[in-house]
Image (cartoon, rainbow, N blue to C red; front, top):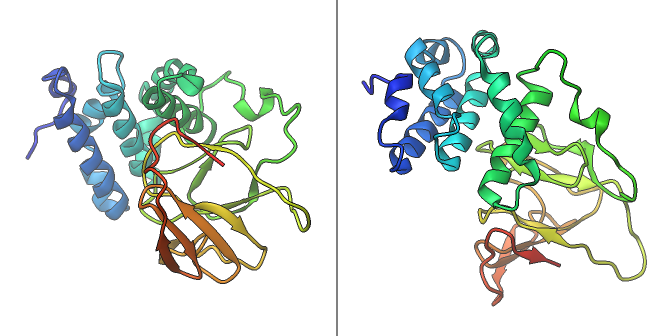
Amino acid sequence: MLSLSAAVAQQDALNPAKHRNTTAVLGCLAEKLAGPASIGLLSPGTLGYLLESLSSDSHPTVMLFALIALEKFSQTSENKLTVSESSISDRLAVLESWADHPDHLKRQVGFCSQWSLDNLFLKEGRQFTYEKVSLTNINAMLNSNDVSEYLKISPTGLEARCDASSFESVRCTFCVDSGVWYYEVTVITSGVMQIGWATKDSKFLNHEGYGIGDDEYSCAYDGCRQLIWYNARSKPHSHPCWKEGMHQV
């Protein structure tokens, strides 16, 4: 119905809201219709549209949702092969340089590009990021062996991102059981997240929406909805709603 193509992706480039919404809808459909329906949806025109949305002329928010859409399509193995055989790895190799960009939107594009190159769309001759990243002076990180299934974790283990419709969770590698402790978090997006403390008994039930703060073994701070969570019950707090780049302790 939308008659998508690479040429359509170049239209109205100065008004990215239309393309952002289109790529977001494509990603939702690809996730909900995984399987034969998703294969039919990824027509040559749709693929060309999404690939062109990753070009340097696109707005970063369009790049981000186009890349997420391509990830969702690739949940179906035949689509993954189709996307991998396109020029996507070359485009992502350019965008992954944004992984530490001071602009938080571009940083998201860089993070997702790097994650995709390491996990989905492999590029021949490219060294995996986890093989070359330095972990010197990192004493605690997010535990890749204690995480729900759809959370993306950076090679340093210090950054996490969720692009799934489920509520994903992760614990860290360092346990504390005495004294007074705190940790700091930099919020890259302003969306719904819960950060806090949990024991090993706290359960991650991502498809049911249970994470940190949703049982008697954990408590969480929600800076988006301005709530404190414990045992799946919340109470409001008066701290300002968090924004991109805000530090939380």
